[in-house]
Length: 397
Image (cartoon, rainbow, N blue to C red; front, side, top):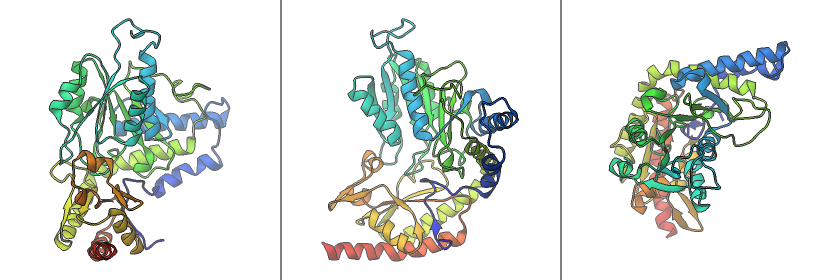
């Protein structure tokens, strides 16, 4: 396993050694319930509150605006469902404060399934009006369409800061300005961006920000949500009233401590992110020079420095991923082949990519642990694998 080259960091990351070390005492010795009043409980409580301060530094907000969640999916659901349940009296078409009801949610066609799937389900149930704003072939949001979509009936605008497949960075601050001008709230899904670009709640214009720890070297199963001071949400479930009553259940103190340590490490590492970008650029340029009929999706737009979505034209992405896996290189594909039928990812479809390009989109995503030697090995493996996959496809057809 040590010889594997891991270039799938947008899917998940390895837990940093410092994070494991910080968490370990809270499994073995400092194991108290953070709401118990005895010594072990107070120690756990203090650790949770110190972690809240650290995560707030990563997100550019105040500590009381941070609540801990299990992941980005939960945070996204809490914002969307919690806001709808808070604002609307389902027995009337008026809000609880008597104003005309806001039932409209605006989002984009390239959001994470945890947002899009939930919104489509709510639309089918008649709970919301939904407008999905398109992107162009470069992955750029149509801001004119966004401006037209947001009106006085809009409750929430939900847009991710960094697209998870292409790494394209979206102008969420400009979109937040459009939302606030119409009295709507702004939710920023920063799951893929956290730890890779600076975050500041005010600069983003965000009323809500969601992150997930396992995307930046914290353990799986812990994340955070910011809720701007003065706003409120209805909880998804009820219980002991932890996390300001929004997320009942005994806090996973070791994971929260791990999230805070990872947040600190991520802030400290931001200054060196250009090294990762340089490695990503090297990967892209070398692959494009050595593999014919290949292109980079989203390269015309500002992107995360760690993400390369490379389309190998006329090749099935899942076959390329398997070939690279056999060579010890871990990457991912958005496309999938079911019963011989190629299904590109929703992102590639939204970008209007031709099938011969969309079906071959492979994502390489780096971390701060990625080395130049690993990039060189990945390039060599890719240059060998893609032509072989294409030959196999021709033979099979």
